[in-house]
Image (cartoon, rainbow, N blue to C red; front, side, top):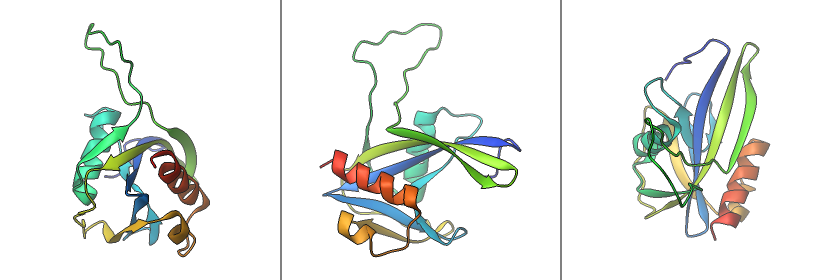
Length: 151
């Protein structure tokens, strides 16, 4: 999806783990390994966005590993959302930034479906294998954290 706002957008990413490996995609446009994710669209909340991105980009059934209050209430359209494992903000271009909500998820299987219009490849990486490919430092950090936390 294109940028919604000219200066800053909200995005979501999922570091999906299955049997001590994390799923990364080789992004066609960016030509780099990144997690599954994308922009939060105007008509959706962050829970809807992360689940939509996972379905569109790899087709996996997952469990989002995140906190929601055990004791919840319903009032005036209030909805509790998954708390991200991490958040960051980074520069995308000289005039645009992304606020990223970073989620960890457990896959129910390793059977992915490639979205060829977006990715060249999907691949499961162990912690050791993460060192074998060029990765952005933040991608490597979050991928290692996801594997460590979801063992």
